[in-house]
Image (tube, rainbow over all chains, first blue to last red; front, side, top):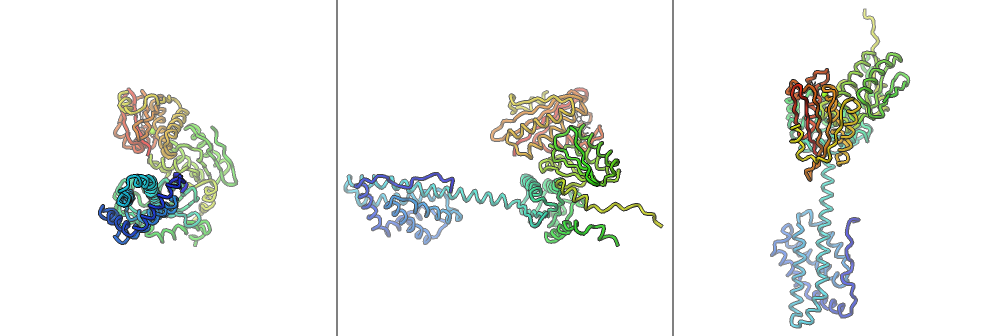
Length: 298
Length: 125
Length: 145
Ligand SMILES: Nc1ncnc2c1ncn2[C@@H]1O[C@H](COP(=O)(O)OP(=O)(O)OP(=O)(O)O)[C@@H](O)[C@H]1O
Ligand SMILES: [Mg+2]
């Protein structure tokens, strides 16, 4: 939360006695009519076709909670509780596809519902009405602002998080044991991604001092000739920085593409599946302990 | 820019620590091929960490060098190719085919240590 | 000359740096200038190495086949894209068989014959103009990722 701009935590610094009295009175009024106003608000939300991703019961439940928090903020002048609730609410509804315009619309609707109710009650006396609105408006505006800004920030945070997760997911380089990296590739590879993948792998080899890499293509549905060439380049580049690559999980289609574009598969160490690949890799790493000359000499 | 060649037991170690011109690289090649014979070295480690670029000329020179050293009875391993340099090499279509590579000096030494002894030509009945 | 003007339509003229190429030392100087330019334009370390490699190939061809010539390094301004333009030009013998030279594996100097076709693969735009006895100009552009 370090990047949150500081929001005012007091609605109205004025401690003017008459102002406080008016505020107390209007809160009392809104509390008295709690049930009716809350339902009116929910009706307006559904009528405006906001929150279509949620059931009516869910909307009613959230309306109750927000309404009470809203009154609390009006009454105490502290928006912290409301702010926390708005963040929590955003976190819950963002994954369900609720959009910014809906949240802003909902808050403005509540403002409208409450203002109408105040009009109905105090409208007869222009002077009182003015004083009530003077107390209500700035407070309501700041609350609306808090909720909307909270939502947008939460949304941005989630989007950032997802983007990072996707970036990492698309090319994980996993050090499974000393000197051994696994590179499971999942999904479609395009030239842009295969370049990223190569750069990440080469850096991973240096950082982990890897001697063997198992590149698993089980999750790759198809490749075209350009990408196949990139894969071959990746294998070669890895060798240049000092690691041997074992390719696993080549589907029949993939194998065919590689052959068709005249990739010399003999140059690439391939093993059927990931498990087999890891076994071969471990044997390669264990080569130091049991030299081939001792094994092969009868 | 003269590249120093160190002798360590059976091995020669040359570390390129700065950018080389084509002429420097050719000089290094000739010196290494020469010294492998003089010292009867079994292996050569060429550390190219300092090379900023490996283009078609450097690759050809290094490949030739490895082959010449091979003919003189020793193995060559090239170590320290930087990720960016490796990336550019394959993009250019260059591979150091037939020339062993390792991560760094330490890995290069380990590699040479793992190579089984050359079979001594035996008289067959 | 003609190519150069076409190719640098978006090159900022005041950013163009000319590196004369006569010796193998100039090859190193030119590619270092290219790397510095790339890094100063926030190209990644990998991309800067690609730029340096491209310049190395083109500059070596000058030294090898034309004896002398020059490399021009310019910044491309096409917001939001950032790019580098590299032009290599000489007044040497020209390339006799352009088709084969671009195909790769063809060399008149016992090389790998990979320089030109490799450079072509590494860049976003590639233009080559050559005439026997007149010289050779290679103009390429590479955009930052
Ligand atoms: N600037 C030039 N002037 C004249 N001929 C050139 C020039 N550049 C390239 N060539 C011709 O084109 C051929 C191919 O060039 P390319 O750079 O692709 O390969 P190479 O220089 O022969 O070998 P490599 O670059 O792989 O070491 C050269 O052999 C040469 O005949
Ligand atoms: Mg060349």
